[in-house]
Length: 231
Image 1 (tube, helix red, strand yellow):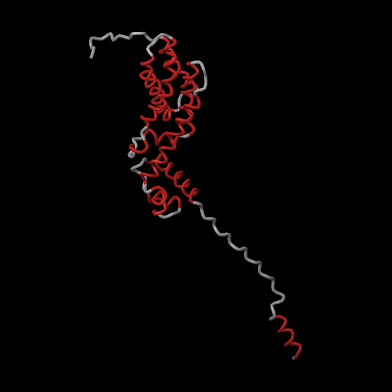
Image 2 (spheres, rainbow, N blue to C red):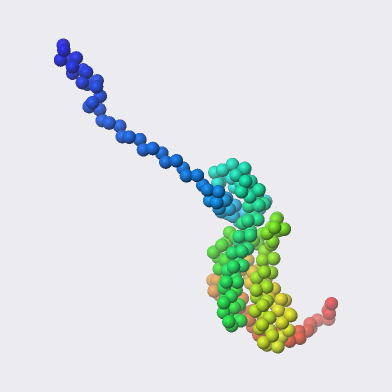
């Protein structure tokens, strides 16, 4: 009897049972810094504004996609308008920087090519940003508009055209008219190309420069209207 008790005590001691593996402690999720959270909200807002526009995007949706509450969005930007304003300002600065940074050549025709390529490059690489810029901005007072951005780019071209006009005997005071016309032509064509995506970018740039350059080459010093209207 004693031996049986000993055997039972051994069986019940649990020494023959396999040991359970130790649990791996869960790593605590690292909390985003304020700067990281701000950038996350900007990225989410940029995507939603490009897809749905300002009116079609809500603070609730932005917050939900970021995994935060609405007050966090308000804390960083004061609301949807503030977030939108920062997104638009960034895109305007990016495009202006790409265009002005591309104007490095000395020959006027190559400068036209560089400007055309810079805008088409931006449209291709930052399509969401371009979608946002070409929409009517509901917060134009703080961010400006696409038209004002085109005006900024035209100012850069204006200085180049002014020097070229002067060297060719044209009135340099007329350079702003032609600068606005040239930049506007490229911008509107780029907007069309965003949807069409045909022909290839280099071919589009070549045709734009063809029209612009050959038009400039044949400028009259004193252009006249041929119709009856004079005012």
